[in-house]
Amino acid sequence: CKGLAGASGTTVLRFGKNDIADAGVVAIADLLRANSTISEVQLQNNSISDEGVNTICDALRDNTSVVKLDLSHNAIGPN
Image 1 (tube, helix red, strand yellow):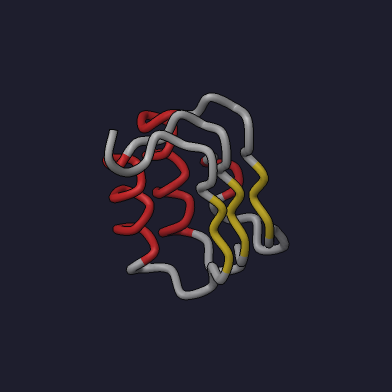
Image 2 (cartoon, rainbow, N blue to C red; image 1 turned 135 degrees about the vertical axis):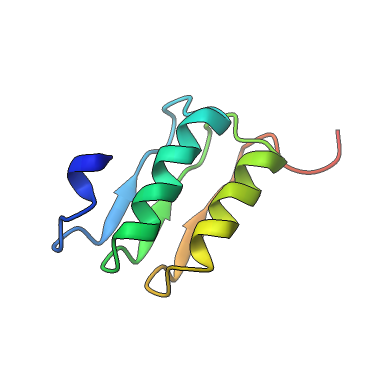
């Protein structure tokens, strides 16, 4: 993700079905803080929990370019 931080042409991140989990979300959150051209983030089917969602939400407070976020089919919400 570090290489994408300065990639001004990147508008969509497609990380669906990569088993990123909460640990991987930290790197994506850092990327979202550093990149203002990304408008869509696809993170479906990645074993992301509520903790990972909170990490992404914190990053989106600093990022105003993301208008679409797909977190479907993750471990979010009540058990």
